[in-house]
Length: 248
Image (tube, rainbow, N blue to C red; front, side):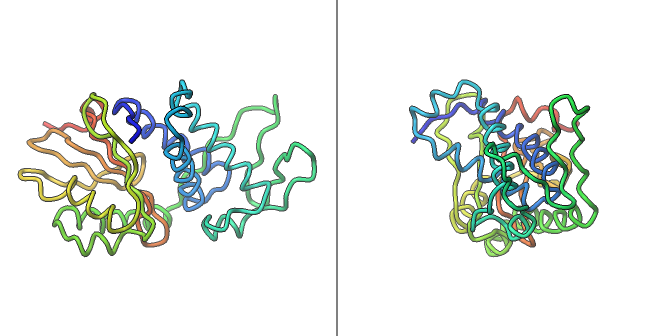
């Protein structure tokens, strides 16, 4: 199993918000943006040891891959396993040899060099945030009560969970896939811990979970949502990354 330093993975998880903003700016769809970010991380974990070791700056690699996926999705037919929204909104392939994307109606244009300031990512609409909030709260309630059946019910069949492993030491870290495996992982990590409070709070601008013991944060979890299910759980355990989440 490939070893990845917990600090490095925490930085990669921090970068996820930036990747989401890139995809949201291109598509304006949370479901499509989440798929792009998930596919980016799947490709990272699909690298072998030699390929991974050759990447000096993982954050830059993630950004480049996510950007490439956005352009591919705009310029060509979307993959069959991409969300239906992505397939439905794709434009016709670009005609020129460099495949400059031709934006579909309602999609922002990729800025030309020197064309002025880059547009800011759109703010998620209220309906999207409300849907995310409902699903995230179901997930939080299942974690708080340790209800394994409720947890499996809110997870998508191909759900993924990624954790930084905790601490600053090198840890064997890889994502876990599949509803049953993710449910077991989350149950072991986020439920049934004596003296632990599960709080629903804003994480990266959307509803997430913060676990605290005596006011000190021990875990922060963000979730990706599609329709009424959680498609990915992103858990940070590194103490250095949790300091700002401590409460008196």
